Length: 308
Image (cartoon, rainbow, N blue to C red):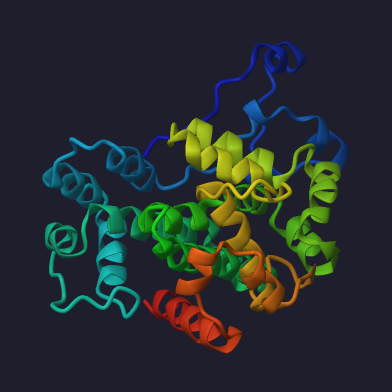
């Protein structure tokens, strides 16, 4: 499968003509790394089947057989998607024996969530053995599950909410791939509010995980709404009462932190009750009034994914 790189901006190309470095394999000194334009970072490719599924599902005219052929084109990826489709997380009444059957039973919208979940886990790879990386993975899963539940309030599509929740920290995954040990150390030692780590990332990499995530989403040509979520999920919440995908994911991220699934151990969290009070009335009615119930649901979802 061919690697997918990013097209350099003119100013980046002028500043670094001829520079080609694979940070994921070779590493760089901190100062050189800080000066390396994003365009020249040769990140290992994110599973392109997952990216293409996200692109296709947004097309109302996409045919079921197109999605089936796409997922089935990568046998290993298809096998893992099928295993996830039959897991306790989705609990189909009748186990699917093929990708086509899984799509028919669960729907194309559910497929995008399955594919991005499998893709993120594959992208993290061996780094999942590190506690800090495993916590990051579980934070993303928890955010996706919470976002899907909040979307049951009716204003945001549940499948889009889950996918956005999984994707919101995709920039952290990129930073993990570039410098796994350094970033794991940062996640393991930093203390402060969730957004306070952005400056530390800027110092270490030359950009933070929100900016890195936006570049990934743009490079994959995903819908703009995902890019906005990735860039703004640490921005201050709106005070005008507006509620959409972006605000939903911000709250999902903060609730995941409060429930014990923060992206880093030293993250300062708000009490769960305080988080509930910040939800719109409609979403508060459909959400879990007790954190214990929420934790059981998240733990069950994570266990279902990690056990396959």
